[in-house]
Length: 458
Image (cartoon, rainbow, N blue to C red; front, side, top):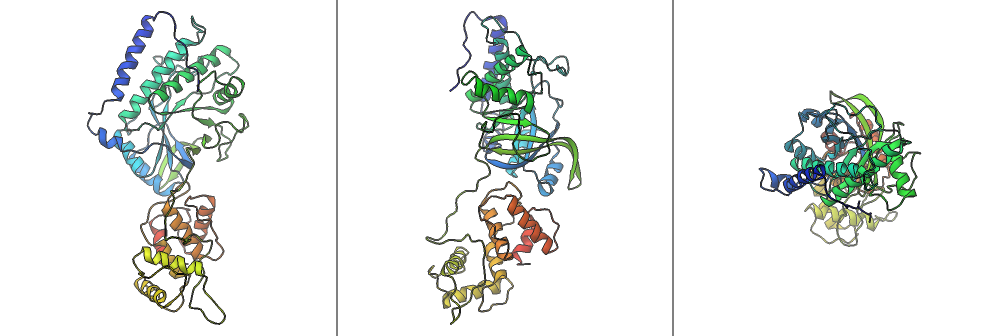
């Protein structure tokens, strides 16, 4: 939907050389005979659909640190510098295809970052002397063609690096454009030309384009171009806003509220500082992500015409003159017992003899007293039954629904919405539960928390 830069005139020696390098790099992208290529192709798109916390650091952390932070930190996403001659950590000692595959398999969302040529008026670059800055010359065709060539070459190089690491097409590549003087026309316009070519080439290679920059310079530049000069530049699919205001959201007053909304923003809301999780200390920036579709859980299928998600799971017992068990809740009980191969009858909504017998058998098998009543502890053992995956803010799955249902059963006053998305309300309810049963209050559902829920501790 954007107009690409026009190419006219005879090619120069520089453009021929750049084109040859780009052709060779592009050819390398489609090579599939390298060892481990098929395994890397099985990696998921990253960061994909996610709303939650992330961090970024100059050097990709060690596997031991990633393991500890996965278990103890609030983060599910990590920024990694995969390419760019101007990045501070040119030598990534931990980064490898195995490292990437391991993190993705364990649920981490990766944000691949390139820090290549920077704006011509950025005083801190070139960083090493042999790294380029964005060429600010208008060029013979008055469209900043030198900068466009640089942007295309950098995108090609980035995708080659991504594919070598097993980061698959459909993933987002983020270009890090550090803050610069927005009032410098040649500097600003050449940066826009560079990013236009970057985005076009990233798209041509079947990846998603992202740009990281300061809210008041690079991000404002892109938003102004979006509104004031629509269609003149290829804009990134996602923006990563550097705005250290301490607010874990994706908002900033520097750009308009409708830009890259919904679900196309990341915000770096806290700058470099040390954090320690699981006795592993790392110097990081903190980020909040809302990308793709946001965190969204897949649909569930249960027994026909049966609702299993409730805000409360009260006690059930056979009907008498003063009480009739709610048929909707009885159907939930019958359905879930059936799904666990613990009930062979029909899902009728009647708390009859077959249902009572199945309920007694379940209670006895799970260390509960088998009585006429199906109480909250009985509900907890049934609702929590299954695996014990690590869940925290941003997780989205059927296992999150399992956790939310069990928390609703554990306490009469919880009343969580069973959405399958681990949101702030779920985190708060989990902390209350952990506090109530004497567990560490971290708002993370891991082995000890699942053990307590499945044992019906309340």
